[in-house]
Length: 94
Image 1 (cartoon, rainbow, N blue to C red):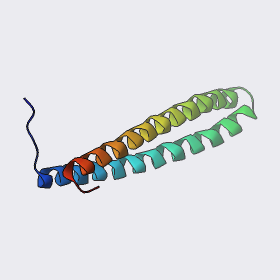
Image 2: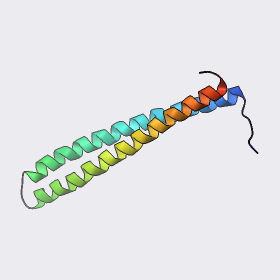
Image 3: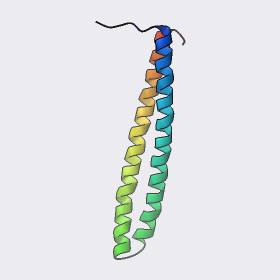
Image 4: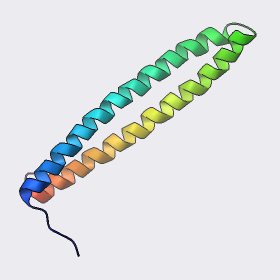
């Protein structure tokens, strides 16, 4: 059996989710900064030989991981915004 939430409860839930979305936006920025730094490591490493080249290969892996993290966080932000819209519509705000 589904319990119906009041308008006040729905608005509170929407505000909480907006706060979570703000945190996700910050994490997405961190992931993008991380992949940018890894790109510098990649460039530096791949222009050398030996252990420096190994750092370049590690940099490539880190760039890929950073991009994947940013993409997953972006997907979460998109779905979260959609969810907030649904909550606000259910509350009769939009």
